[in-house]
Structure formats: C-alpha cells, structure tokens
Amino acid sequence: MSETLVNKVANSRLITLKLEEYWPTAAFAVFDLKDYLYMELMLKEKDFRESVKTHDFSQYQDKTLLVFCSTDAIVPSWAYMLVAAAAAPFTADVYLGTEAEYLRQHYRQTIAGLDLEAFTDQRVVVKGCGEKQVPASAYLDITARLRPVVRSIMYGEPCSTVPVFKKPLTRK
Image 1: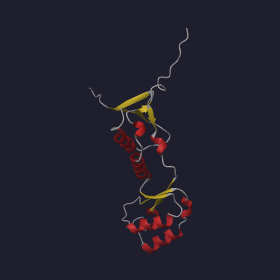
Image 2 (image 1 turned 120 degrees about the vertical axis):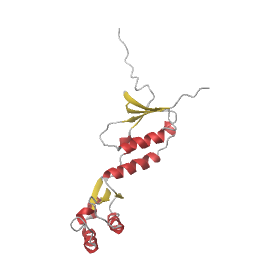
Image 3 (image 1 turned 180 degrees about the horizontal axis):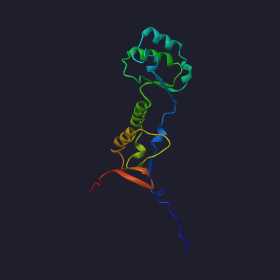
C-alpha cells in the first residue's frame, strides 16, 4: 500500500516575500571624515580641501559611498558637500551615514514604493533568515505597509511560521 506524498506548503497558496531580494545592488564603500581631521578632532579647511582634491575617488567607481564622521567632531556641512562633489562622478550614490543607516533608508523607500496589488487579500509569509542581514526596521515597515491589504501576515518559512497579523472575519 503506497501513499502519495502531498506537498501542502506548495499547495497552500501562500505568498513568500523575501526582503533580502530588495538588498541594494551597488557595493558599499566608506569615507570616514575622521581620517581627514586634525588630531581626529577638528577640520582645518585648507588641509581638508587639499586632502579631498588629492584623494582617489575612482576607487569608489559604481559603489554607494557612505560618508560619515565616526568621532564627535563638529564637521561643517560644506565638508560633506566637498566630498559629494568630488565623489559624484564615480559613485552610484553618495549617502550621509553608516551602512546601517543607509540600509534602513533604502528598505523604507523600497517598501514604500512596492505595488501591493499582488498582495491584496493574500496570505503572506515574510521570510526570515537569509544570507544578508536585513534591518529589523524593514520587517516593521513591510508589516505596516501590508497590513491594510492582506488577509494575513506570517514570519519565517512556509513550513514553520509565526503568525503576526490576521484580518478579522467579517460576518454578513
């Protein structure tokens, strides 16, 4: 007597949403202004301008350049502008902040721009673990964005989910 195995997960009509697929396509590079400050504390305009002028920005070709200062120095806004002006011909993007800050903003913008039509009245599983560390804020943002249109939201893998939201049944 042979029983046919049925893949209930494949037949469940769940939509699996993998936030990892929305990871930025350009590689990251960092430009820490700390390295261009006098004693890592203060910016000397003449020295800073010369450093930016002689810096090889071509090494950031087609990358997202993350510009920040990792010390508590007071950096004038024009210093960031000089870096952006010098880097722009080479980079895919220039961003003021760390990688974590960039990823939060990237995911927030990406999720805000999603077309939700395919998710209307569907059961959605937001995939958990992956090879890339998706920021926690992305899970918050996708839940807030999907909640008004989906039937339910779960987290994890289709074979083992954690329920997050379920639309109440409406009675007629």
